[in-house]
Image 1 (cartoon, helix red, strand yellow):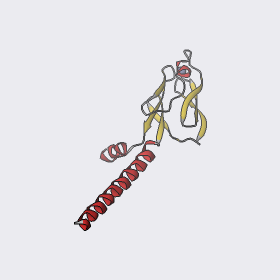
Image 2 (image 1 turned 90 degrees about the vertical axis):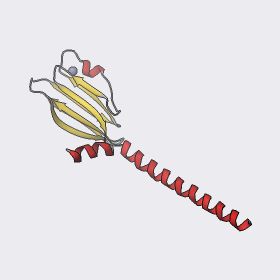
Image 3 (image 1 turned 30 degrees about the vertical axis):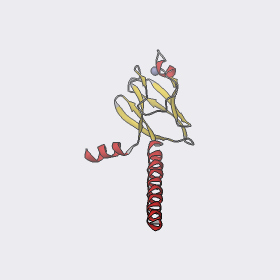
Image 4 (image 1 turned 90 degrees about the horizontal axis):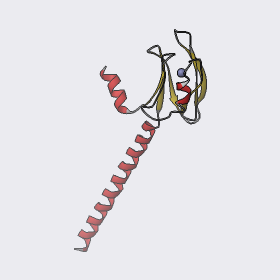
Length: 130
Ligand SMILES: [Zn+2]
């Protein structure tokens, strides 16, 4: 009788350990995927750049539109923002820093758009299907 209880106890403990390992492994994978954010730069409705946002990545570049306007884009610490712009309204400058999935900065006069998307497995599946 006592032996049976012990066997059940061991089985229960092993199950709990197995479930914990699974949850840990899944959580780690999930964090890695969610941490990968990509900034897509569109000019005149064309994709002109793709930048993976990480904490230690820093860059700055100028995007010129067909209309002659330009925007200086700055990427640092996982954030993207417009640093300088030739547009008259400067709305893009006031949109500030973006860093989350789905956030956008738009400069209508220069036809520029910056969009952030999470690089998650569902997106990769979409690409394969296409
Ligand atoms: Zn602007």
